[in-house]
Length: 225
View 1: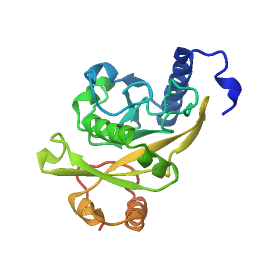
View 2: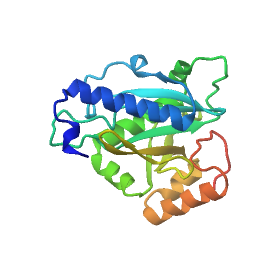
View 3: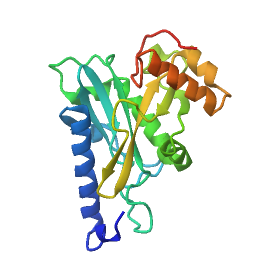
C-alpha cells in the first residue's frame, strides 16, 4: 500500500473508503444487491477483536443465498498495523437457505447461514494466525456447535478455502483482500479430517471441486470420503 493513501485521512475516512470499496466489490462479484445484517446482531460486550467492529452482509448469487463478513478487512486504527485489517473476509453460499425471491435479504439473519458465518468470522478474528494460513493458500477445517444446523445433531464442521470460481483476491484501496469460502462438511468428512493435516484437507477440497460441489454449502449431499 502506498503511504500516501492514509496521509491526511481520519480513521473515519479510512473506514468509509474501505467499506464502500468492499461492498461495491461484493455486489459485483455476486451480481446482487446487498443488505446489512449488522443491526440484527446484538452488540458484543466481549469477544474477539475485529479491526473496527463485527458486521455482516446478505446477498444473492443467482438462485443461491450468501452471507458475507463485513469488517475483518477494515483498517486498524493504529497506522502501523495493516490497512486491510486481517486481510480477508469470509462468505457462505447455499441454495438451501429457504430464501425465496419475494423475501428480503435481511431474512437470512434467521437462517443457519448467519450463525455459521458469524462463528467462523469470530474464530478468525480471535486467531489471526489462521488468517495468515488462509492467505497463504492453505485450506483449514473448523468445527463447533450450532443448533440451527442439522437439527442440533452435535458438532458442525466447515472447510475454509479460497474459492476457484470467484476472484478470490481483490485489490481494494488499502491493499489486497481475500474472499474465503465456508463449505459445510458432512459428518463423515468432519470425522475424516480430525487429526489429519493439510494434505487431507487439500485432497477433500479437490474432490469437492471435481464432484461439482465446489465451495457451496449443502445441507444434504453424499459424503466424499
